[in-house]
Length: 150
Image 1 (cartoon, rainbow, N blue to C red):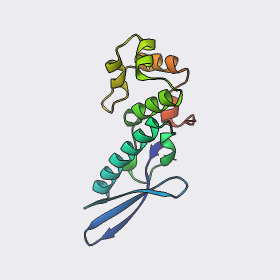
Image 2 (cartoon, rainbow, N blue to C red; image 1 turned 45 degrees about the vertical axis):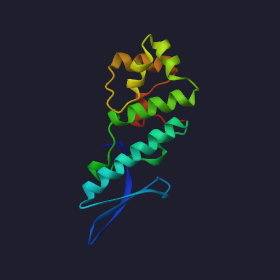
Image 3 (spheres, one colour; image 1 turned 120 degrees about the vertical axis):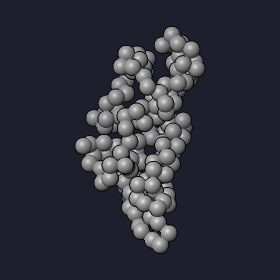
């Protein structure tokens, strides 16, 4: 399965497991502790999502901190549903478009548009198509890795 995922190392100690996240270039960017690898990975995933959301808000490509390909651990994989709002926010900010401008382009209210950039968003394919048209670029190929985020 090709997917965006955390690249990590882990060490077991007397007090549990320490997991360290690394970029594809080998740079460390996060550490989490848990009683098991799964628990530590859950914490690290939350930190990575917050990091990517912050990067997207700054107009920085958010997926660069993740690996893409065959994951080492199933719990390290990010779903399209998790990545969609992050990539959408990045594309909007990178193009210098406000949420209000996107909302107007889609003929929805700003709070409705804001919902598309939230983690509990569940847009229909029709909505995704409209978002892609408004941004002038595909979203789903960026999330599945068949195209790179600029």
